[in-house]
Image 1 (cartoon, rainbow, N blue to C red):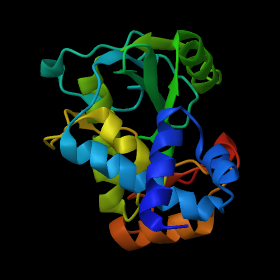
Image 2: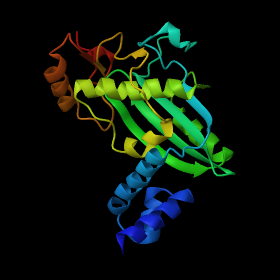
Image 3: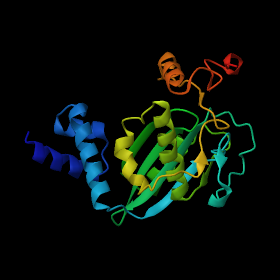
Length: 239
């Protein structure tokens, strides 16, 4: 199939809210063929600036536990003082208006203590019911739930965590390339100090290579106690 025609078809199906796997199935091509085209379409959105109005932004309550937030920002977190066991994982959902009757929704999973963006999804097109479903799924693992947040806070959390992780030797999840435009422009310089109490703290996830992560941290910041980590449980924290 001609590349330009394939791009047009992907753009049309993406505009109808179909997922990358659904698009690949509909066009009879491999998902690996569709993925770069979706990224190219996302890049078009970034370059022409045609982002829909922000209809809502949410973040898990307790997002700032272990972080330092500039008081001048005015951002508060009612459960920040509670010892919430999230391992530094913060979830964010952003919904923008798409056309006259749709919402474009993106979600982000961010390790604010070490690795930066660990996962991202969207943009997915849907309605208010779809938004509620995606939002509940995104925050299901947080005991204290979620709260509305200004999109500027989302930018400072997500882009700031990406910058912090980059300095430690880690890049964001590949799917972030498709969802990054949804956040809007970033001027740089976060009002948040990342790492747990200002120091890298690594808690392995199910898809991580812990040895590789620890080796990278030793290379970029030096051995413990320059960073802390947990292997399988609190009893195995170093230091």
